[in-house]
Structure formats: structure tokens, C-alpha cells
Image 1 (tube, rainbow, N blue to C red):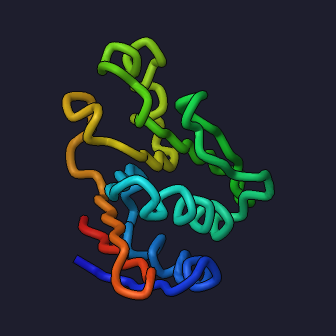
Image 2 (spheres, rainbow, N blue to C red; image 1 turned 60 degrees about the horizontal axis):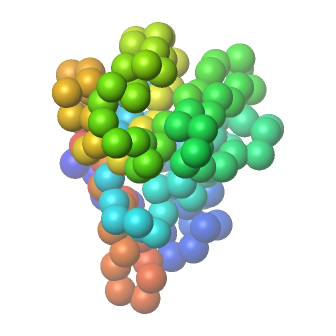
Image 3 (tube, helix red, strand yellow; image 1 turned 90 degrees about the vertical axis):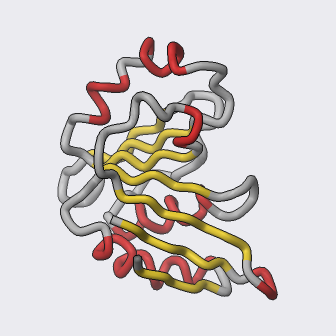
Length: 139
């Protein structure tokens, strides 16, 4: 497990390339943390590091947002907070996304435990003292 600490959004932007590097070749990334911990903010920083020019935002209502990185790679950002059951995700055609070989950044993966691929990267974000964020990456 690799741990990073960020005191600000600027710190996250600076750490994003290192965090991406910690993922290795695995592009299936699950983000854990309580509401307001900074999952979406971290994903925005990671998308910026991947060269996404579009405005990134939480797909809370749309469930998935798609971005294009500067090397032409696709990045899918999921937010499963509002789903009621895994059937909703199955109807979305999740397999096309999850097994595409593209980056899949997933917020609230605990809502879909039976649909997750094996061996994803797990990122945990917790609020530490003085509102710092502690980011742990496990592969």
C-alpha cells in the first residue's frame, strides 16, 4: 500500500501523476471514502493529469461521465451513490465499460460488490487532522 497526503486541491493536482503511477497497468480503480472526503476532487485531478481538457464533474445523476485524455484514451467516471440495486448498473451495460481496457474510476463501489472485476486498484480517502486528505492506494 502506498499512502499520500494532501493539504489542498493544489496538492492533489501535484500528486496526481504519482498516484496514477501507483496504479501500475491496472485501469480499474475503486474509490472509497465517506461523503465529502474528496473522491470526486481526486478524480478531477487524475483526469487533469491524464490530459482531459473537458470540465470534469461528479456523474451523480447520470451515473457515468466519459472523458478523453490527451493521448486519445477514454476515461470513465462512475458514481453509484444513487443506485438502488445492481440491476440498474447491469441495465447500463457496465461490462462494456469495465472490460474495455480504458480507465474506469468508480465512486461508491460498495454498492455493486457482485459486479466488480477481480483485482482492481483500491483507493481510500480519509479526512485527517486540519482537513488534510490521506490517500491510500492498494493494488
